[in-house]
Length: 74
Image 1: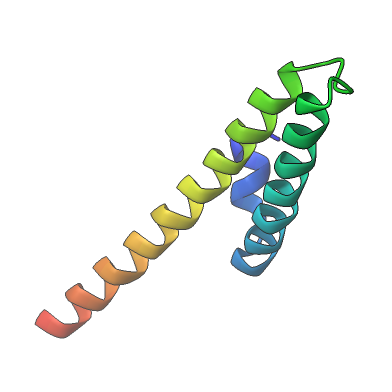
Image 2: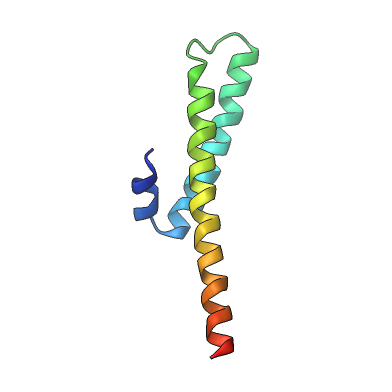
């Protein structure tokens, strides 16, 4: 998933996606341990997608707190 695709999603959708991807990552790790996972690159891709989504969430949270600080000083 590309970063611009993530930024187009609503915060609730991103949170739901993060939960799904984290569950998917656990399943992939389990399959890898059992030697059932043939494409181990999927692990890296899922981790990166989770990191991208969490980055967007953190950016949004930071923007929200900065807006609150600006509103308080005015």
